[in-house]
Amino acid sequence: MNTAMKLSGFALGLAAVFGAAYGVGHVAGPVTPTAESRHDDTTAETEHGGAGDAGHGTEAGASGRLPGGLLVSDRGYTLVPVIAPAGEFAFRITGPDGGPVTAYDVAHDKRMHLIVARRDLSGFRHVHPELGSDGTWRVAAPFGGPGVWRAFADFTPTGGGPLTLGVDVTVPGALTDRPLPPPATNATVDGYTVTLAGSPQPGRTAELTLTVSRDGTPVTDLEPYLGAYGHLVALRQGDLAYLHVHPDGAPGDGRTRPGPAVTFFAEVPSAGAYRLYLDFKHGGVVHTAEFTVLAGAATAPTGGPAPTGGPTPTPNAPAPTGAAEHGEPGHGHD
Image (cartoon, rainbow, N blue to C red; front, side, top):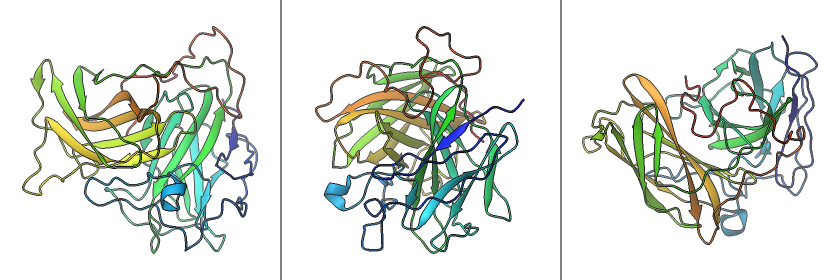
């Protein structure tokens, strides 16, 4: 059964809206950013940042660039959702010439990383679409139930620098906003306990170490996943500014051990509440541990932000079947 969906681009300073039906309807056309949001070659690129890949993370006021994922169009590249059969999500990246991009560099074993999360920061998924000859990326729909979801396309077009573009996807239906869990330094997932040491600091690099154990025993045989022993995504509560971090060291480099500790160097763009999502692989399965952390002078969150541009939440409505909850294991990796 086709699920009606509205696709809307959301970006700071970007006045453009995508409209389409999910499974039926028409292809959403390219979006041209406003003069205020258009980035050109004089704007500092959003780079993957060296050791630890601090990457995608400082505010425009400090470095001349916005955090990743806030724009649907950047440096001439635009994320365009397109019509897809029921149960599938599809999109294209159009380039400066207006045509679909078909050449991408491999970054962390993949040419495209698609990360989705509900705007209340629940339901996180990290998946890898397949590219068709016409420049269309396709993947089994990663959205876990009703709500307003943010989809982040993290990629490097051949001949260009790394980019993260974002678009909102609204899945209609009864829903309740899920409060952001309080800050914590321990998370459990699938029988594993992950402990966080370190605290993010706005505008400067901070060391974050996540240590994995199972049944009280340190896990010392983590398996490489996408070329690393762990991947860390941070999303800022409210606008979902995006930071994709990779760990210090790599499997096989002669110095990096396969656990129990995985160390990252990350720079968050501002004070605020953030949700951290750690992907790690053990026993042939990818697991995701989630944390809420506070950066700077932020106060503890009291609840998730109201969804933007989507259906009005239904108070006291039961959680929809199949919807991903905060901390729910099995986040749809491939």
